[in-house]
Length: 136
Image (cartoon, rainbow, N blue to C red; front, side):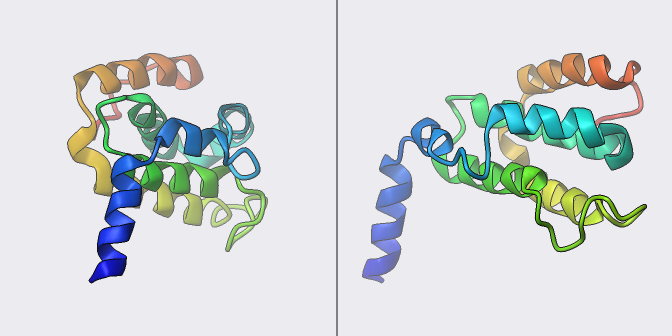
C-alpha cells in the first residue's frame, strides 16, 4: 500500500514537461515530426490523426501528469526505431505502432477537447488535406 501511495505522490508532483524533455533518447518533438513525415502515409490516416491528438493533448497544461506519461510512452514507442514488428515490413510493420497509439487515445480520450481536435485537424490537413473522414 505504501508503494502505491509513493507512486501516486511521484505522479502528482512530477513536472511532466521536464520529464518529457529528459526523455530525448526515446522521444523528442523533432523525432516525432520526422517519423510522421517519413511514415505518415504508410502508417495510415487514422494513426497519424491519433498521433497528432496525443501530441497536442500532451502539450495541454490541464492534462494530468499520469495521462501525459501514457502519451509520452505511446509516442516514444511510435518513434523508437526498434519495434516488435519493424516498420519497414510491408503492411504489418506499422500495425504495432497503430495499436499502441489507439490504446493511448482510449486511455486519455476524456482529456481531448475541441481545442485539441481543432489543432489536430489543422496539422492533419497539412499532411493529407481533407479532414472530413477522420474523427474520434
